[in-house]
Image (cartoon, rainbow, N blue to C red; front, side):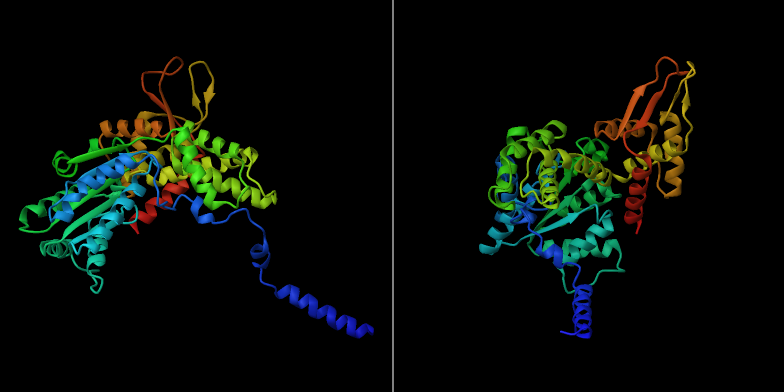
Length: 420
């Protein structure tokens, strides 16, 4: 072959290489995952171990609907990752399948209140599902509400699931209106299942709303280490290729999650990230080492997930702490020492009131503000302590537990999304 021919074929090969799709390498990469979706937090397994009593309890409460009667309203709360949403969706799926097979007029509707955070948005979401051919945009909340009530009046039992119910701005109006609608119906009914991550949320409800909503209450406890180990075993057997996950790695992920929160999502995320690390390394196996490396990444993800699930007023309090932490100079003590990032409770409340005006929100009272501070500390997002030696006067000192700029930026995104 002459020199010109060699050059010609060289250009062809080079051109083919240059135009190769950038995902070819990723497609060809070997992976230890058999079905990655199964080890993600969004996957809902068909079996929900250690939650059978709660499944039976909710099923018993909703059984009234298949007999043509309104079910009691149910309020479910507990920490993130305790199975509240998975259990509720599982029971609702079973209920609607049974109702369809027996030709019973039972309808269900699931609303994530983080995405639909007002009475109007929730009514629109529900009405669109029940009237798929109609467009309700531009109509008043009163009109959409009447359409929803009319739908139930035709003898249908509607079960409305409101996940992250504490995100709803005008919750009192929504719940009171829906529950009072049942008084006007000769047949049919509307039942509500409210789900909240915040165990103290119900204390903030208007007494009128509380009496309407909380006819039945369920508290989902955190999982313990043996329970999380069993949950992870079931998931990893299907999510990973055989022989690619050490048993000790599963136990370690379960132990870490149990110790920190009892959150099944944390345990699942640890195994997911550990598997991704093993894939990147090309080791072909998940060991304790991969789980330990995954922990830092998962810790950060969980903190920011937690921030996104906070009610808006609580986000505004945390935003105020982050904003002040970025601008305030180190706090001088009588002893002459200076402490970084320490804030006085009173100045945080003043900043919170200012920020509420900026976002056109009404600030809560000082009493509720103190409740929010207690809850933020309970979630591990801040540290607070009574001022002691070296500080003038008596007050509560507050310090942010994480990087202020990242917390501030995330809440800005959350607040922007909620007002969009």
